[in-house]
Length: 376
Image (cartoon, rainbow, N blue to C red):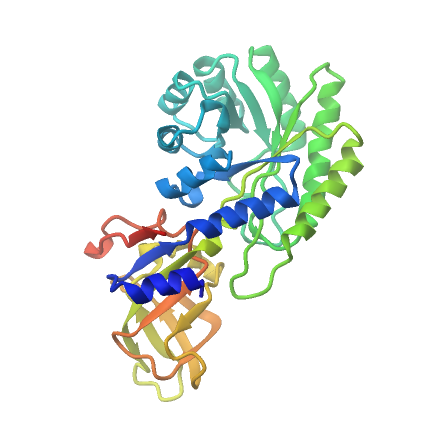
């Protein structure tokens, strides 16, 4: 476990479940990514964790921000970000949200349908817009390809229409999927981007930006490639498809920036064989899928777990949450083994939980209040 967080937990009797996040680790992650690809602008994906201490730290590092809603835009502005540092990156926006963003001088907007383009034309006239492409998400633990993005052919038509409508066709974006473990996923996506750039250039429209999205992985239950493997692949692909005229590059990391900076401390409510002598124990935690661990859906994200009895004899377990809901089971197929000594009242730590936990937490399902958050 992160020594700083371990010391904090040992020094404070915190009510569980709670999330503790190391702000210094966030700065290290940001600087590491910036060093790996210094030519890119980093737009932190606010949805990963919008806590004010995180926004404050990233503003001191001159980060940009990818916002999914007017509320996230407002949070960034309130923290001191400039409108020019914020992209409205959700392709599905309410008219009222577009209006509020435009009034706040937000310049950059994503879209991937004609209907969204029409809303932007009416409510954000003259804005810079970029079209999201649908790309292969193979290799991602948390795919995002079904809901967002369009074909290269349609993107070309939409960007031509954007120009006719008085908007500023600025570029394209894509997302290779969250927790992407294959660096090669970026190659074909960059190739698709080049197709759009070249087609529009023949129409005297010269795009200026490619938004590569996020997707950079952190280590959970298995090893993942180093960030240098991703950035080298990206740089080589950009050179191959764009030569010496590489456009502005935007990255939208969320998990990579905050994921490994957080630890959830949780209490065991019950540990039981449930009458099966040879079956795995069921261990029920006071945090579950509805308490912030939504990414355990399909057992996609497998958090490392540490206990006070690490190093002792272990046995197979099924992990579940506290709610009175049958789907609140975290890990049943994944091969988790935990110490046999664990019993009700013991605390365990879920590592690398800084991203997509606090914001996924329900407000009061079964009466359980959201987990407490500490930023140190």
